[in-house]
Amino acid sequence: MVLSGFDIVVIALVIFVILVLFAGIKIVPQGYRYTLERFGRYTRTLEPGLNLITPFIERIGARMNVMEQVLNVPTQEVITKDNASISTDAVAFYQVLNAAEAAYQVANLENAVLNLTMTNIRTVMGSMDLDELLSNRDAINDRLLHVVDDAVRPWGIKVTRIEIKDIQPPRDLVDAMARQMKAEREKRAQVLEAEGSRNAQILRAEGSKQSAILQAEGQREAAFRNAEARERLAEAEAKATKMVSEAIASGNIQAVNYFVAQKYTEALTAIGTAGSSKVVLMPVEASSIIGSLGGIGAIAREVFGDNPTPPPPPRQQSTPRTTPAVNPSTRQRSAEP
Image (cartoon, rainbow, N blue to C red):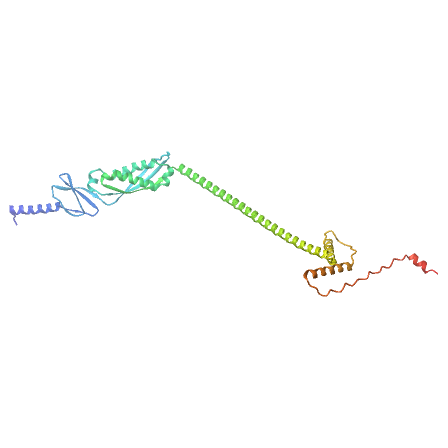
């Protein structure tokens, strides 16, 4: 088949149109933004999906990843405020918010964010003491995040997080810190032991004080009760003496007998209960004791107002006759004729 010149032109024109269509259709994947340049100048940003551009006049400038990205910060040496040398590394997360600014405001965006993070790590951590660095890692992360995020804002990106992964002091410094921690714990243990001993002594002193107070109160109460008992005993004895005196004044001889018998009985009791007495020889007549007891009974009946038939007088016991001792020589002379 022989093609004429017109056919060739038509075929070439169709192929050209197809190529123009392919050149003017751009598909942007999800998570990316494409910048569009017209004769080398930025015009607009292509969103994810199907986009049409003017072939040969407009072209794709930069393909920017707008997903959150991770940036590893390598280990670096940092001198702290108290002149301690430490090694630290970190990880940073950032996200492109404005593709045009990220593409045209800074060259080599990832390297710029990395170097900015490293310099700010040295700045922030160098302004703090070693103890503060080891105990306030969250504060360090917050300060780094605010500083770096403010610095990269003109670039159209957002630093979402910066985390310090590890802080490594020198080995000798770690050993010194371990000894310091041990000394602090021993000091704390001694302080707690001393406080416990002091509290125990205070409690024992309080217990002794309460015991002495209770003992004194008990002695005071016992003394009060003894005084009250002696007072009542004295009142009773005074009353009894008064009654005996009135009976004597009225001419009742039994009252005298009662008084004498009472004192006599008390004297006998004292003699019989003496600790040094082993054998007691007393020339006591039974009739005297019985007579005294009879007088006591009469006084008791007069006091209580009971007048029964008086008991018969006690029977007098005859005094035993003692046979005089006879000399044997006398008895023998009387026996001779």
